[in-house]
Length: 76
Image 1: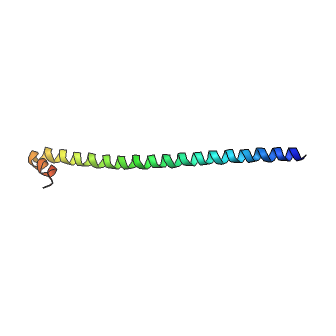
Image 2: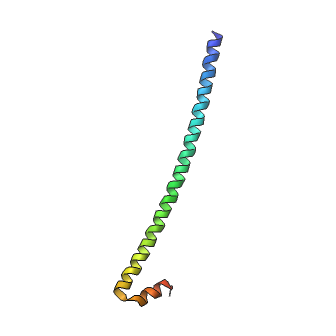
Image 3: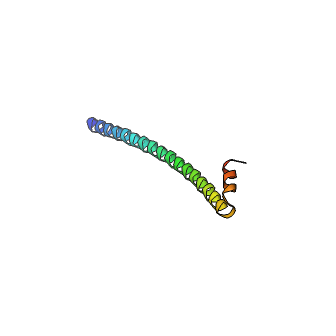
């Protein structure tokens, strides 16, 4: 009877350790995925700004002529 209890305890202890290791692994993976998502969202925002600046320069040049575009790019 004692060996049966010891076997069960040893199995459950091993299972607990395996579950804990798997949980930690999944937690690290989730943290890395969240970090990648944040970086991707930041890149998307930067690209949106670049596109808006490009479009504003394009429309100003098509309406006003190239002098205004040149002055906008020189920060005057």
